Length: 202
Image 1 (cartoon, rainbow, N blue to C red):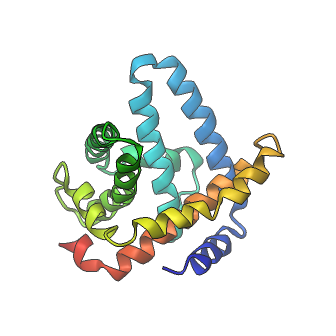
Image 2: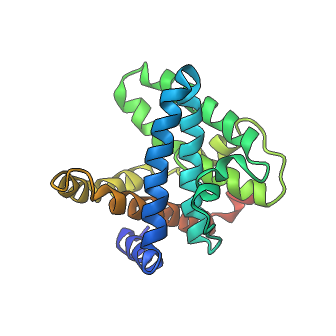
Image 3: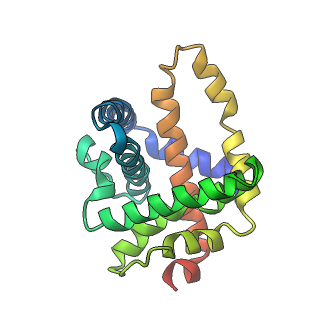
């Protein structure tokens, strides 16, 4: 995977769409914070599903299916029949990663990269009109990420400098950096999925 080209593609797509991306990120931070406070015990689950919606909003954006309405984009994890598969996938992924992390930190990190594409995969399977089995997205993500986990880890590390610079803006820079990372991450998935259609469509 050409990390430089993927990041350049994300910046190209964001040109002219930064206001949408920044407002979406701001809504995510504000709505997520409020929901976590007022929902107490269920806050983690709700914010987790909101996190999925935030990621899918950028996949839709990369796929030229941008939802101009900030809030419907943010809650895209619970619309169009995605809610139950997203919820089940999030719960299973959380439990599996917790169990792997009990074996030490490194196995948990490795598995987090193995499962990293499962939310995007749910969206693609849903668009195909598929009935999604509980562990199907996780299994396909593992297959898709076979041989690419280290590459995605290095891809993530390439943003570290920007995150450090954002500290000097008291975090304000994150309003631009996080959307840039999300768009690049979604673009990474789309490239990987397009190269491996047999996994997604099986």
